[in-house]
Amino acid sequence: MTLKVIDLAKIAGTFILEQRKLFTPDRIEKKGKQDFVSYVDKETEKMLVDGLRTIIPVSGFIVEEKTANHNNEEFIWVVDPLDGTTNFIHGITPFAISIALMQNSKTVVGVIYELGQKEIFYSWKGAGVYCNENQVTVSKAKAISEGLIATGFHINDNSRLEGQLQTVFEIVSNSHGIRRPGSAATDLAYVAAGRFDGFFEFGLSPWDVAAGAFLVEQAGGKVSDYSGGQNYMNGREIIAGTPGVYQNLLQLIQKNANQDVIN
Image (tube, rainbow, N blue to C red; front, top):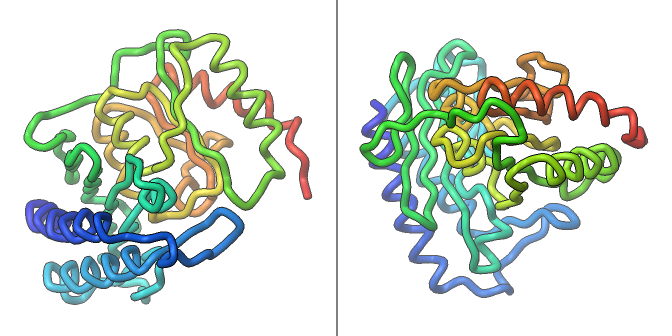
């Protein structure tokens, strides 16, 4: 099954890359102040939904552009057709396709296709994590001081920005650095592959994190929400990393949370 999902992601990825050559700014739609969508997102999602239905005909969907839905089926696909749309419309990378399959609310397959480098990260329940055909794992970093950390900023909600910026400041002061690539799915895939040692962000949706969180855990990392619980799929906040870096991030984020402005 995982190979069929990978093949479908490759087909959809070819469409996205072809459209990138033809894309012009007048084809952008705004969902929010800094939240964009294009016909590429929508057409790719339709393509993925149709293809995934052939793999498991009786399945539901949680998808960003609302081209399908679910009714508590045993199998539910969680799909982001183009994670990093802002990067895409500006002609920069990364941007990615993210596909997860959940069985009875537990993720059992995760596939992320980062189109800039043409790298497919994937795993299934009980397996390791692979990038293209090479197995990968989280890094050996034991603390933030040994790591490179990734984050993102919520585009329409500044109520928690002050605490996040304080966290960023402390990471920059005591790490190998911090990065903001602009694609949460890619950030999580890179944690799973040992390129980033940790990642945190709030304001995310299930399709942003479902596949990537699964990959991190399959690769030996830890994932939670900001309270240390497991509501990162629907709680709109996530921390991921090697066990040691994850613990550092959790403590740091919680320490700085009292600086946030609650609206």
